[in-house]
Length: 187
Ligand code: 5GP
Ligand code: MG
Image (cartoon, rainbow, N blue to C red; front, side, top):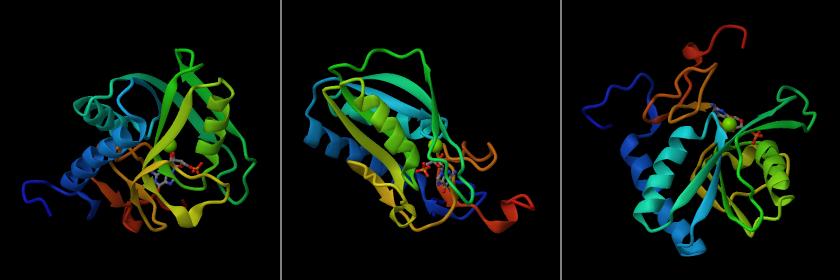
């Protein structure tokens, strides 16, 4: 563990590993897409930290990005799924003819990203690639794959680096499995 850092929870992915992987991901994206400018669509709130790091790594490697934000939430995430995702753009540019990079924190059942990508494709972008920091492939129940994945993980509920539990822990500079004692009773 990085010696100078205080860890509230045992880290699953430490800050140095995140930084190294984000830089490598930017390299993979440049290798696949080239260095023409892109338009990033970042899903709020969870992807805000990853997006901030990734767009700076992309810029270091020669891709400039415009950045748009989309708030997406899915319903029926409990024992059943209605398959509905609501989307709210924050002042969006047209995506027609643009090279879109869709960024989310984590690919879980796949519902959110599949619906968001479907909406984006309706706007006739030149391309739409998906990048996620984390992927839980064992949880998938709709067909959805990301073009670029930071870290595949097992089926754990994780927090930190943008990901929350009840709006807490997004500010942790590392990813951690939420310990049972940090969950409120009854949830
Ligand atoms: P999906 O539609 O793929 O099931 O859900 C994706 C969304 O669920 C993510 O963007 C994230 O907001 C939330 N999510 C899924 N797994 C986790 C997790 O382990 N931790 C946290 N904090 N959020 C998660
Ligand atoms: Mg999310």
